[in-house]
Image (cartoon, rainbow, N blue to C red; front, side, top):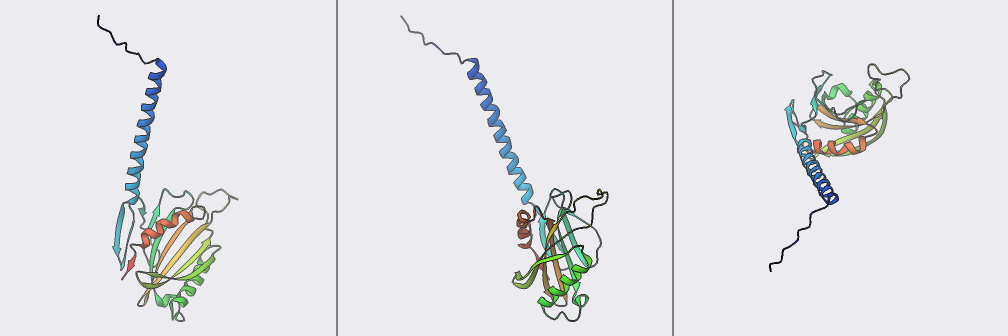
Length: 204
């Protein structure tokens, strides 16, 4: 007499649980793939090399064509903040524009800071320190200010505060100013973007 093996049929509960695990596994795999793709997109850069300035900026930032005195470069991150997007701009300013008394880089920084205070609303310098850019002496000016209200902003609305850093590098009779700005609420975590841009920043 041959023994017959009995096969246990999975219960409905077990089949449902197995299906749920399959759904969760699929979701985790899709999430992981999405994070990988997002990381690749965020790490992609675009090179800029013009008017003696070279740097690389995130490919998902927008290059602006606004015309401001002495400005050669301006990009913003449209996904960073609705009120005030994170931005980087570069200006190349003749030394004579900052006054004849600016004989050293420190004098240039003070002259530039004074000029900024005359044109920017509620401008407050936080610190001025010496730095280096590609082995060249530089000065960084950290400050905060209140930007002009956006068009269409409601009367009496709470104004936003912007944190910014100007990095000044002298090349002959020209001062190059790289300005990094972001909404004060996200400025600390946005600084990593500045560090990545500065790693590629050079002036000639």
